[in-house]
Image 1 (spheres, rainbow, N blue to C red):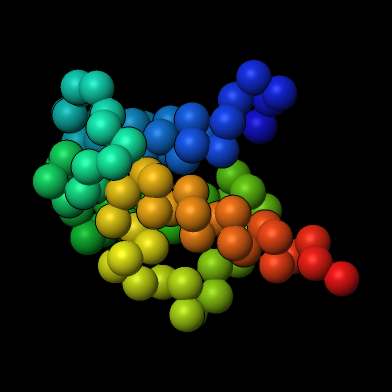
Image 2: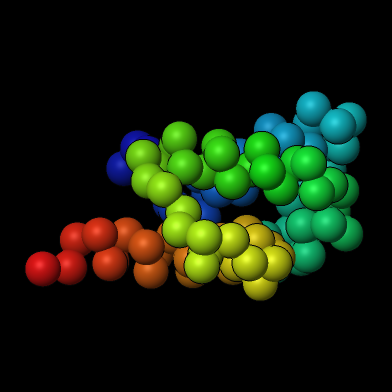
Length: 89
């Protein structure tokens, strides 16, 4: 992630890549439900793997909930918590 890119921008970019592969080319609403924007259940798995790779972390089973993957904003909140826990003493 570059200094000019926020965590939310990075997540939105990953979602946009998945949507683009599905032929969905429209502005992404970071607060909107991802399923309503065209993300399928299979896409969710790809998104989870892309997030783990992009941020060099493993999402624990307890983090794999529909609430955490509802929107870009909810994914951002989950990642912020995971990153804080990883750096906590």
